[in-house]
Length: 73
Image (cartoon, rainbow, N blue to C red):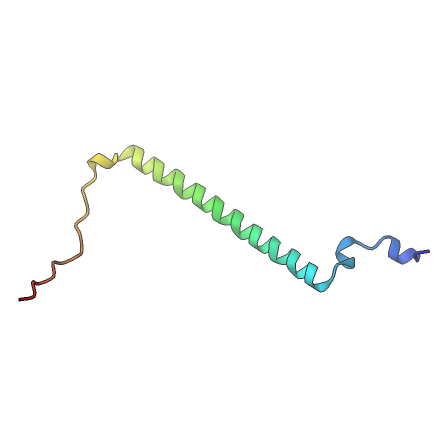
């Protein structure tokens, strides 16, 4: 039979060090993904609001920064 103290151990306590590390890594990645998704959502809303006030057709085109290369003779 199993001992009394082993009956109520949490699943995390039974996991191997690899499983605990993997679980922590997934949690960190999930948190970072959620922060990035929230930031993207906020920036998209701000961009849409800006474009609603100032349509693209009214914006001046940006000048190209490239310079023409001199012809090789």
